[in-house]
Length: 523
Image 1: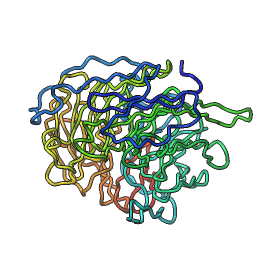
Image 2: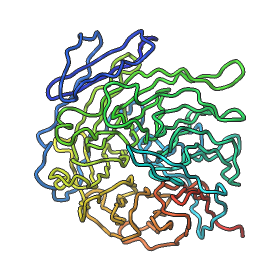
Image 3: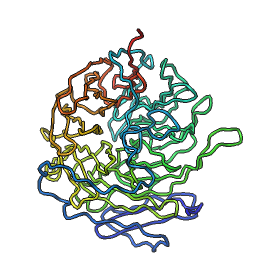
Image 4: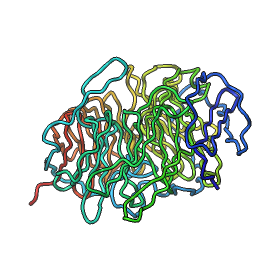
């Protein structure tokens, strides 16, 4: 079993060499190392089982995009910690709601219907736009509202509807989902919040969020005010590369928190959740794993921009994530409870920045959206919308290109529905793609960019655009181009954030500065 004093396992991979540093019986992380990512320093051999790495397959650098062919059926992975059959279903049965970005560990649950037939704006929150200034390097600018990914958490608690989200005013807001009135005072952080918050799926009154102020936080909401119970500074991890923001939406599975950071590391934290004698929630977190998400082969190809901005996906006993260097990875963490570090079992390079969160389906396939920024040969060959089979020698099943200009490609997370995959691009394309062959069945051109991820509820597809409009399409017949059911003008700026549908209500934020609820008018 994991020892009480164990704090972190740090794994560093270079070309042909594995570097491992283990901390035991130390109540702190390593001081920041001054290690060049392309070099290796000699360290004592640890006394734990070393993670093993499966080398890239011979198909690591395909020369061209494959011709679409019917998908093979991979061998199902072991059920492990997250049953692959949970694809498309709620995140357990303890808390009803959409609790994390795309709803569950496979990032495939979008909410619960019905979808409104003729939605109208019921309320906007707050009265004044949510704005603040934020600085990157030497540039300071004003940010307003909710942006990418910005999906709210919506959940039922004691018979009432709660909504929480992080915003560009540097605050986490807790509001009533019916009235739009505050439930608690906002929790203030030191900088803007770009990603989607996560609410604890096991019923603990806890919210998990990152911020551009370098901190990943655990916040309680069981009192009159939200309270920070713990935080992790991205700069405390060593080695690290690139940045110190937290954009991903954390996952909590069996008391462990899984999160990637813009410090380019993948983190696993043992939360040790409980209640005190007064019935108040408490945590006693331990950072048990911090794994660099890069290796020397990647940095040689793309440089130091290898941050992890997407949200971690879990299926079976594997955590999947991608980074800004375009590296897609799978790490087997089945030995955590026995003190064994995770093992990298999958490596695939897509060539360009991947900020969009992947989706894992019930057959073991991964669906990936890739940006087109570098314009290198690898990204031209591989494409921007991918279906991967992690168990195949050549993982690329099919791909779709979006290369009409630089800064093209995909920022939104795809949606998988029946026999079709929906995806949208920075160039304003909304695509319906045959799930088996990768053939484009239909395409619509909407206001660009399309960074808001698609939402599929029952047989309705929702897509927010950058003109402040939500479009609803009838996808009951997936073989045809879907007719539009309605448009709802949120009229509050570009919709980059991802909406949530919950029992007749649509919740969405925009860059205009405010958060909106839409529903059918009574009667």
